[in-house]
Image (cartoon, rainbow, N blue to C red; front, top):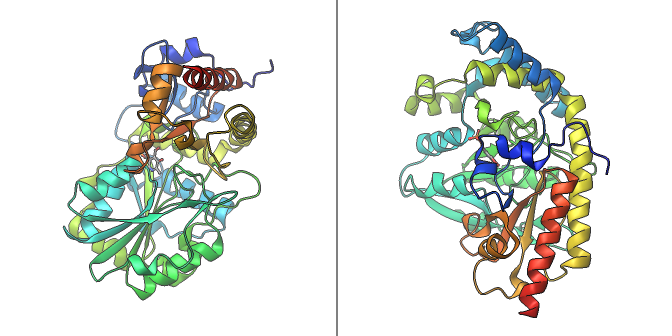
Amino acid sequence: MLTTSFELPADVLRMRQNVKWRKYGTDVLPAWVAEMDFAVAHPIQRVMERMVADQDYGYPERGGNHGDGTLVAAFRARMASRFGWDTDPALILPLSDLVQGTFATILALSEPGDGVILQLPAYPPFHEAINSTGRRLIPYRLEPGSERYGHAPGSLADLIDPTTRIILLCNPQNPTGRVFEHAELEEIGRIAIERDLVILSDEIHADLVYAGAKHIPIATISPEIAARTITITSATKGFNIPGLRCGVLYFGSQALKQRFHNRFPARVLGSPGITGIDATVAAWNHGQPWLDAVLEHLDANRRRLHDFIATELPAIRTLMPEATYLGWLDCTRLGLSGSAHDFFLEHAKVGFSAGEFFDPAGHQHVRFNFATSRRILDQILARMAEAVRSNQRG
Ligand SMILES: Cc1ncc(COP(=O)(O)O)c(C=O)c1O
């Protein structure tokens, strides 16, 4: 079988000290947390090796501004070249942890008891950011259509009451893989303006969009929408460096930034370390050829997953994601007695992300991370099919 230069075998992956490969026993193939089983781009590896060789571990000086200068420049160049988005350096806040940025935004721009709209199903820390801070989670459901997930037209406005403050968007969406179109984003923006909501847009998966879809940062739709939008992004998902902890919060206006900092002075959030800064700059400035090759591989994997389910496991319903390396599998028709996650873990020895963490009603769903080698993907699929067959026989 042909393998690409970034694919890694299971024995190498098991040596890594990461949660993905250490959470379960060695009999389990992990397909859960959002990181890829791939070697990183050479430009990233080179900056890491240089840093180690030079023992360059001091407070960073990389283009001024406490080391953030190169990061700010790389972010601006990347947003301009990929999305035609002209960003203002004064409105960028580098930080190490995007989930922290989500929590901070919710804490800064709403009060306990206020409503935060969340697309469901949703990345579990979003639930936590709303629930653990005493805000009210207002579900904005994504329903399966014939080819992709979508919101029922006109359903957003009815969700908003006088204490609703924020709409938390995830675009591209984790876990459904939807990439929202211009008209959809414009409609969300229009309602946010009419009802005076802040838009918190997590665009961390924007690099992982397949041909046929196009990522549009919601802040580029209009200056009025931008003025009430905080965008959160990083190179960590697209370039597979989540452990290096580096990202960016972008405020669409000075007024929004000021409101945020009235509650959270920048120093409260800390700042990225040198590994995160250098790797992110290398990724954004020089990593695209690697990402293009990875996307080609992921595209083949997403098709393989989709076709396999259609032919071998037709009781499972899934729609091909437009972006991300995550499949959202509805296993309701398997008629399992417990949760789908527990079934596949016990009977297939495959560790998916449990659907109930994404949606309280999602225990018959699993999220399938297919960013792995073709060999491991095929092993996972074979294990799933065998487990389902045995269950039907038994
Ligand atoms: C939508 C989304 N936001 C944020 C993150 C994680 O960001 P960080 O690790 O920088 O907190 C993830 C990771 O999977 C994600 O899918």
